[in-house]
Amino acid sequence: MRNSFRIRAVGATLLAFALVASACGDDDGSGDVPADGPTITVGSTNFGEQLILGEIYAQVLESAGYPVERAFNLGARAVVNPALKSGEIDLLVEYTGTLLTFEGGTASTDSEETYNALVEALAASDLVAAAYAPAQDKNGIVVTADFASERGVSTTSGLTAFNGELVFGGPPECPNRDFCLIGLTGVYGIDFAEFKPLDVGGPLTVAALEGGEIDVALLFTSDGVIAAKGFVLLEDDKNLQPAENIVPVLRQELVDAYGQDLIDLLDSVSAEITTAELSELNKRFGLDAEDADVLAEEWLAANGF
Amino acid sequence: MEFLTDLGKWFLENWDGSGGYLNRTWEHIEVSGAALITAAVIAVPLGAWFGHTGRGGLAVVSVVNVGRALPSFGIVALALPITIRIANAVPFISSGLGFFPIFIALFALALPPIFTNTYAGVQGVDAEIVEAARGMGVTEGRLLRQIEIPMAAPVILTGIRLSAVAVVATAPLGALVAYGGLGRYIIDGFAIQDDIQIVAGALLVAALAMLTEITFSISERWVVPEPLRRGRGVPRLDRAVSQRVA
Image 1 (cartoon, rainbow over the protein chains, first blue to last red):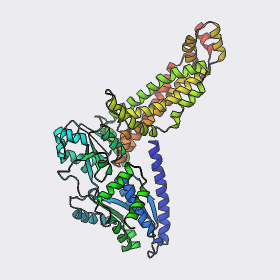
Image 2: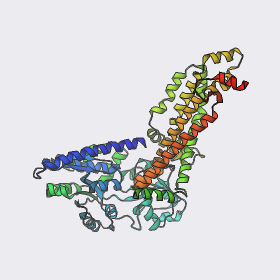
Image 3: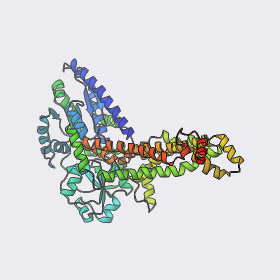
Image 4: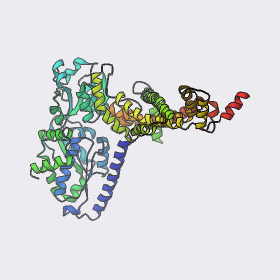
């Protein structure tokens, strides 16, 4: 506890510095030359993929001459979303379906439809969603290969045959989330014996599933760990999970300051991010313990940025 | 004001059931108590023995104090992969998550103050008293049990009290590895950004830590032999004698 608070305290301090920096940047921002505009503070939530994606956008902006600050690892959406709206951070990599639901809209499995609804929902908060990436990252219900073959389960609804027997592990906020425990219970009718609050699709959840501490885990579909560990991703046969395309969301005032050039740059990056590549990056981050900034740098170089 | 009302409402609504604070407090006490008792059972005899012989004590104190240098969060994280493996191999340990890893971290936290205080307390007993006892033919075992440990009791109990408070205040870490306890409210509250739940959890932990401090202070007074109660650590045999005479 003591330590995670310390990390947050450091994070908060950095955020404060970033704020001061961005406030200073505002004063002399003319908007014509990138370096003269307001500082772009790129935020991220608290899991590997977010750090990698945050780095990718931060680095591409930096190399194009924009003044960039990083405020990574801030916590769950409930923490970063208000930070974005209040201007403590300016740019955040989001997921279309979950963000739309968070903003009070209704997400569907259709990427385009969900994105359009999201753009509308965000306009009220002076936020802009740039074009979405082909890559998607949904909540994935995952079991071990042994479990899948022994119990003959390949779909999420197949879990109802074992109601009252299985232990489910996921992030602590899962019992309060529609696309997590609420949906699994309400839409699928699954009744778990127990829910174990672990981490957000991270090493703890993976270790717990691998070690047989839990039978079913919530991981992310773009997580390369699933394939690398031989886990089985159960089919979302009742379409609980909406479209979850990766989308950079930024504050309107940045678009006002930098114009379409900024959006075009972000869009050109997003267009190249596919689910397969994201899985590979996640695997190298999570299993091979490579650094997010190095992975982002390599990915950008490989994709011609 | 509204915050206080919400907080009050939280305490009225969340007391029962497995997620209620009565059960969470019990879980908190369960793992704290287990760690503290295990640490005391090991550290008191060991510390007393090293304090009695006076040999190699400093070396052992240094080794035991490593537990103080390692942050509990680090111990939990380091223990987890091992506890999961042990739970798979040993049939009577049902889970490597939750109780087991946080128990290890709290045990390591509780050990140093109890050991160090016992060692120092026993070693600090007046050499003249020890010599006098030896001169009267008291055996080493009786000397330790009936003279040195009772005289060191105030210092030993202070060590146990320090450990107990530290353990209760650190046990919330268990929530990070799926243990229950009062830390659940802080971790879960943070995950869903429920400030009321976070504050309620923090208040409960603080209250339990203070209650622990008070309980141990009172029982210290009750356990320590009467002649030693005032003027802590300084033996007052004259008063013991005068009381017996009276």
